[in-house]
Amino acid sequence: MSPWDLASVVLKLLTLLSTAVVLGGGFSLFFLAPREQKMETNILSYMLMGAGTGIVVTVLFFLAQIGGVNQAGLSGVFDIQIGGILAQSSLGYACGLRLLGFTSVFAIPLLTAWYNVTANKTSAIVCVVLVYSFIVLLLGSPFSLYGHVAELGVVARLAIPLHVVAVSWWIGGGSFVVDRFSISLVTGVQNGGR
Amino acid sequence: MKKRSLFRLLCVLSLTVFGTNYSFAHTALSEATPADGAMVMETPENLQLSFNEEVRLLKAVVTLGEEEIEIDFTPSATASKHFAVALPKLEHGRYSVAWAVLGADSHRVEGNLSFMVGMMGHQGEHGNAENAVHGHQTGHDDTHQTSHDH
Image 1 (cartoon, each protein chain N blue to C red):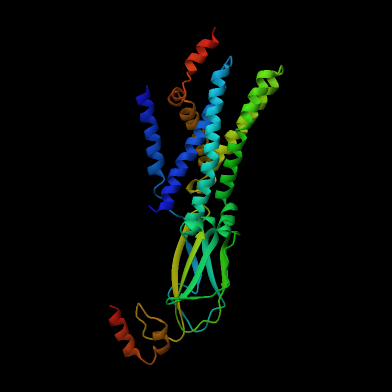
Image 2 (cartoon, each protein chain N blue to C red):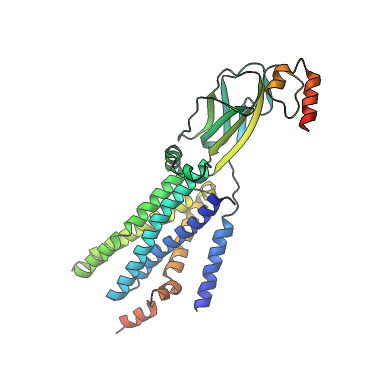
């Protein structure tokens, strides 16, 4: 395994984790009812951390792909010509979608703040749902755009992003990670019953 | 509860790491002109490479021994199945072509082929330009050269 292959594997793993944090955190947010400010703040911080990490990792992943394709050492990472070619390939589109998806996460805290202050809760929640759905699409679809998956049939190319999203909800919003941030969904539901 | 979650996470991580170790490239060179191992009497106008799927040609290097031949090639972002790279007038000799493409799956695939320009001679596996020029006159020397090479 070359250093570029190793870098790709590590960065793919971090991309998956970042995606899981963002999608799982957003998924958890919808289960907070009635909303508790502290819990909501913690989850939003968690999502923003995932989004920030996701942006950095996506950029590094793209650079690692340039280096791997160029096969010219570390200096080859900054080859503008090869970078331009990769940017116009399916890999480039996938990275672009990911960057847009992770960046869009920064709108979620603004929308939840709007939800907390506005009287028109319905409009606010619809906006949050739409933006979150948009993020799910942007972060899920790249998994079927490049690599060997891109050469599979339509069914597989639809199933794999759905699988990634489902796993993200499980890992990113599951009790293991939630406990790590001292949040308990069970407690939230119990408090909501009061 | 935490041990089970940790075990699940480790399973997912292992699948991610080991599942991405092996890549089976599907991109392949389907045809080349001159073909690999071909012997041509005159310099071909173009080096033509055809692949089994649309690819982006990243590299095409023609060498004569250790010397790189200057050709008019720049990597292109345009994907295609067929590429034609103009060749300058080539001297007699055995030429090697190293190519690399970016496949549809964004994997880099590379390969080599060789062809000979000039008169037929007694060329061994490691024949070079000098042998090609003198091949028809110094067949005995070529054999000797090949023996030395071994």
